[in-house]
Amino acid sequence: MSDLTLTGDRVILRLAREEDIERLRAILLEPSVARWWGPTDPATVAEEWLEVEAGDMVFVIELGGVVVGSIQYSEENDPDYRHAGIDLFLATSFQGQGIGPDAIRTIARYLIDVRGHHRLTIDPSAANERAVHV
Image 1 (tube, rainbow, N blue to C red):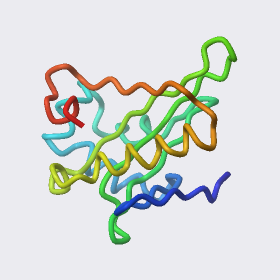
Image 2: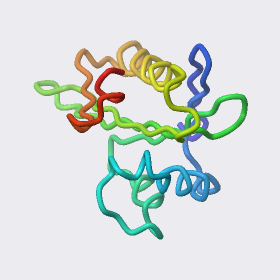
Image 3: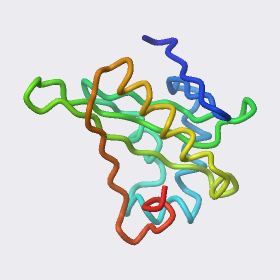
């Protein structure tokens, strides 16, 4: 699955790679992004995002070949509790342009149509009005 790529209306979601760390770190440290991720060590913020557990997948969000953010999902595959959770962030200069909703729709289609989930969750901070709206 190391070459998994998902295509949205405008975005490309590809699995994150080690060489994406610096770009993701820069985005995660932008004030409009960092404020929603809580206190963290700036030196390890991107590495922590890329640390995945079984059932987790981390993608970068590309727009025109440029990494503009990241989206990840985690799965619960127990048949009695099967569902997936989604989390994402976008660089400040790409917020408010419909990129986040396109990334969410793209990964949601994959999780429902390919992975067989019937329930998806995304839980932004209640104070993050933009994320709640999306």
